[in-house]
Image (cartoon, rainbow, N blue to C red):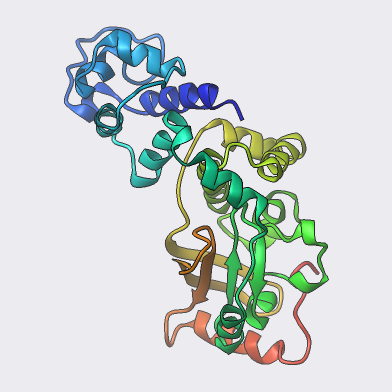
Length: 289
């Protein structure tokens, strides 16, 4: 991945989403040929020269200090994830050796973590890896999201399932929101691991096969996996609203995330989840039917 081009496009996209009134600048009634703040306005907010900011936005991040990056991040009103992404793009050599080592080392699940997943009876739970690969899951996750055991290893990837899978648009009632979340997480990973060939191949495949993915990728949205709610329509138990939590797994691999789903106690969704747990005791439920 060309980090200079990524840095340039990311800064332009973040600048384009801001209006003068958003940051307390007068509009002066002047016609703007492009959306968002002008470069000189952003430079003024960040306290740097227009020439310096222009070089940075053109992809020349050599020798930029963290103080300047922090000032630009504040001016652009970046989220924590976006700020981290900016740092990865502008100063990619800081952890290059560790990144190469991580890419070369297959992600593995400790036996204790697998036991934890299996012990979470009635709670769908799975472990997601660096490229949104599905690395481990329990019986309830299979019943809720799909029978991962029957899939080919390359299919066990959340991005592929969302954009190329047969069932994702029926399963996720807010598919557009889920798709944006997936792309935003992939974009963050791409900034952390720009030399990961498997990640680049995944982005290339999705770009070729999915127009929606191409459009969302071009928007340069960035986010880490967090928490929230998902609205699902399951073929056996109907609609459910489930909360989800994404928890970093302690240990040597910083890119493993444990994701759990739960329903509000006493809600119809909780009843549906219990029914699904009873239904899938003996055989996994294939939500692709």
